[in-house]
Image 1: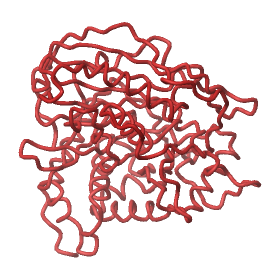
Image 2: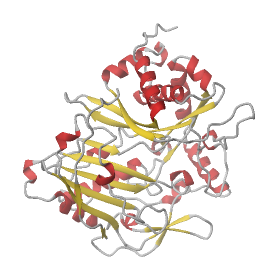
Image 3: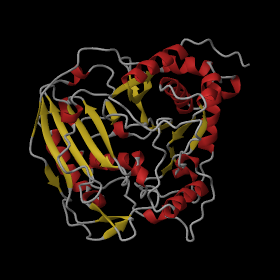
Image 4: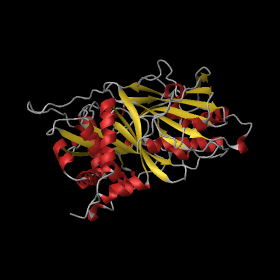
Length: 450
């Protein structure tokens, strides 16, 4: 459940000057178009990711920062679009201008040990702004580096690998593929085991574009006069994470009727988080709330989607209900809504989303209201599996929740038992209510199938 309170960890990070790391060999000078799924306003933001690595005796004498820096340069030869810059075309469509300028790389040292970060590792992490330094002028969408990477060496011999990704370039699976490739080069592998595939046209809208589904996830939210809509306004938001191990998942599953107990752990935890968050933010009972799930659509295509494609291949179907219904009905009600939303995703659904992006001039957003909640499941993406020669990360995933977006990530406790951790961002009073709602839910009596 919630991370215990403790004295905040403080330490000093000494950084070298940021530098640009370009591909190790000449790469094509060309312009590439993003797909109509990549090129949507909802993905125009930066995602911060962090991996923690333990000391590895067999790597004694090797500098992880130098090893990784060299591996990045080698990997960018094949993944050269990451070394490019975004420009805006005449029609407003984003263009990847392949200039080979490179990605930002920072070497740093911190006077702290991995052990001092606590066990198990989970966000939010202390001094995160120092572990991933925001180089002034680097965070824009256009004419800026698409990746910022910082390697911070720890005094115990371990290190922290942190990066910031422009989301229009890749989803979590695409990023994990790129990191895996860097790991291969760092370990001395001559040829990447997965060849990168650009082919962004595969997710372009058909011509003429046909919107064949109703996409409530992108609805313009305009409430009736009697039901005011709560516009997103997080005053003094705080970050917190909540763990779901075997015990918590078992309790939640026991609250479901028998026919739903075979639902996925993601569906179960997402339903729990949605209900607790909705009750915590004190909305009007008749206000509409929506749970938006990021669904990987790679398996939905026939013929199958090409292995090695590292663009965005996910859509965000919405489960929609009212505050009153979510509050008064059992947990299984939310699970059913989430299952239905996920089941709606097909190849045709993805093409319909692409058509919607074209029809709306690429500027359509998901609703910017506090009643919208988005969860991205990264438990099987494999970011933490990145191995630069020091073994897999002891934690890997986004550094923080991003506004209304929470991330579900894998974690391990001291016994090595695998669980999940959810990052949450809410104003402090709402966060306190959220924790209380979760605590109360985990005390409920099991369902008897009624």
